[in-house]
Length: 250
Image (cartoon, rainbow, N blue to C red):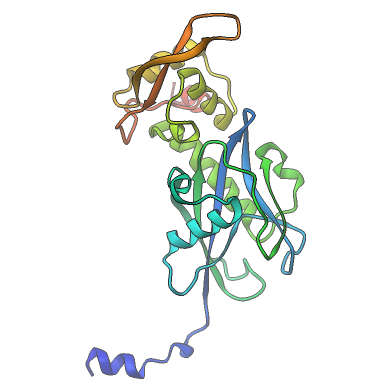
């Protein structure tokens, strides 16, 4: 039997039906606080519960296209603005009972960008909002989204240790102080300003000077701060370790 004959006789109904969805752990920093995008489901299952933005993958799209579509639908982002969002595959979740409707495998994505706009609830949602990560324990979550969120947050925190992706939370030009604020917000730990500044500038390719500075000095009338942009490094060497992990290694 050749391949054409095999495919002509192949019956996919001989196997249990499995659907595929995408879910997006979208993070941004608002007013110095790490926020996560959630939607409140407007229909069963888990009606009234908060969930990650996501949905079924369309027959004519691949996984990352589906993730981009879902993110664009909830945030209103499109074109160049959506292109600035860092988006990477997080993990796959396929426990047989994770969705009461049928066997559904979800492929989760992690996304973050600076100051993402206010969300707009989709057709199957009652509400959509950026919620402070610290407020999540008080929210009833749908499906296994609590686990997905925990793993997405840990991925984001670890990524900041060994990649320059912290710069993706900022505008193209930024100060080292603003970059330190990203680390402090995502890690949840204060950092020594002088040590952080020294480490950042000593890592090859992490940041590069724009040759310009801020228009005004600091809050106390100090000198204007130098502006930097993301460099061409893909990995940070040496890595910037979280305070707790740094103490463990020592």
